[in-house]
Image (spheres, rainbow, N blue to C red):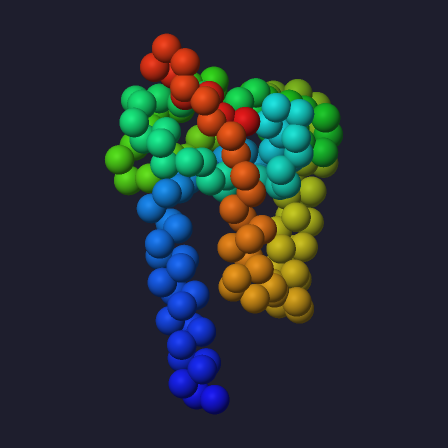
Length: 152
């Protein structure tokens, strides 16, 4: 039984290591955190949130992640930059600063609730590592035209 368990763990580690080089991470953050990340009309979840793109985006100096914006619970909204510089390390972090409009206290309070919700979820029913990987690796489609990679 121990050999089977060790074999399964080794297989999972080898498989996860084999798939990582084909992905490029873009970490969407917001200030305050807890805004909804919406890209090309799809709500991905609360910031900070990481989307994984095909490694082919590293062939270009920049990419367009799609029409992405952060929307806070108060309704405040800010777009992410339309051009993201691509780095050799396989990860880029981009931020959206909440505009100076009414409702900041509501958004800050909601950020705390989102943080507490994540802590509670991790504490009570954290999914198995393989399930977490499946949740994070949501498909993203990229196309390159005239040297510019656009992903959605």
